[in-house]
Picture 1: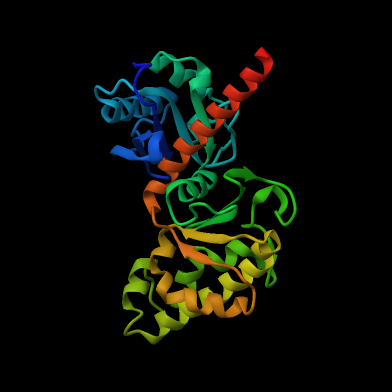
Picture 2: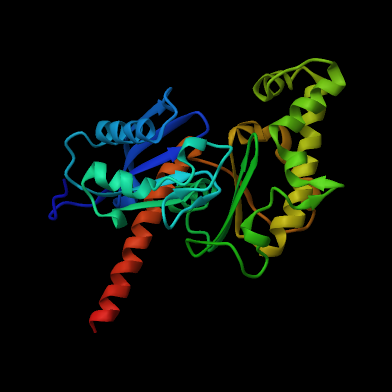
Length: 306
């Protein structure tokens, strides 16, 4: 499948809660092409899931000969080195299954050609490589949605420990306001606050769409911005990031809450950017991670040869 005289490219996947996206990510400028997607299989089995991944990869690859491997952005808990899911509540049929080996067999590759990384890490690496955090030495990515994802990076490498990094590089369960960060920043909070004020049950998108003419909706998002600013001050400021990039569906309505968030930060010199890649960030980041790992492996092999 690989032409040694051509530029390299990898298959990248973003495994979401209801569907899987795939693309070709070229090493040059981390350029994406042939983006495709499909829902999770109706038949909840490991074979059916691998079939979906292989079919998407075949559609994206078509007749390309540059493909040298695949990288998959997966939600945790997941053993990313081994390629084995440890989640019982998400895609439970994958629990304990060796997805790395299964995909390698289907594509006719060595297991080492298939790599995995956390979806929040993939989001940040995509923004560093080709998005709103490009060139930043110290960056944080935060995805705002049904849950809160976070990732920290130094010089293009994800870190889970070190000065200013919360335990495990996670912020969702960080204590704040008598609860945890996710209580204040998930889509559930926006919906519940709006329902308390109006008695109406609405989606986040509907509440955002009405904010220009609905004082209750505007208040809910202003309060959300206050909570976000407090969370950034408590959980991210100690890391001293050059930039914090916000992604996830809630970030699409950033104009409604970002002013209040920045006001909470006061004199703290923290640059906040909105994702420029959004749904494509994890696909780019998965490719960036694959190429980075490949370069590190090549360097290590060269050192052994000397």
